[in-house]
Image (cartoon, rainbow, N blue to C red; front, top):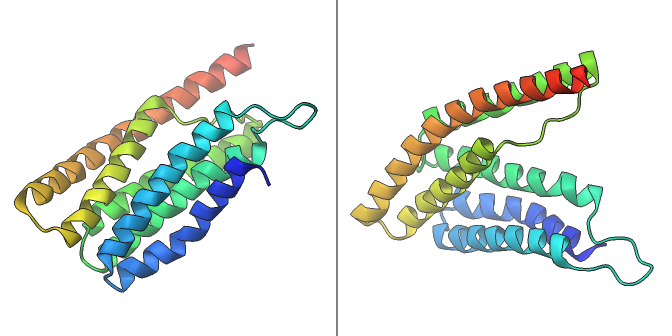
Length: 188
């Protein structure tokens, strides 16, 4: 029941609500909830890093929060990629590319862990940039549904191109980074 974890859990519970809003084409509500989810993501991270624990209490940081936070983000993004593609507000090709990248990373990580016991699968900075670009592009897709002006459309399409490039690039970078980490750990 740490405060940062409660915020993360609330964000995770908001995923079906945001998805339902998009499915019902209530894009204004979906955009508002998406922005609130993004703000809560920043706030729970800040809270987890900055809040000192009361004297004698366990630290605010927790392994549960470390696990839940990126999974809440991934659940939100993945769900929105799919539902936006279903309602025709996002390209299926980009949705499939993002899922293929994520699934490839997951399958490789499970295979490597099961065969070697290696566990260092932290995200890379390129992967984090890709995630930020995915968030911005989803936000732009929602914004365009609410406010269909040329500038937003142009920015959304630019976001599609950048996500496409970053998804490939971050997947390749992640593979090389994890291989380097594995060889370094094995040598030590």
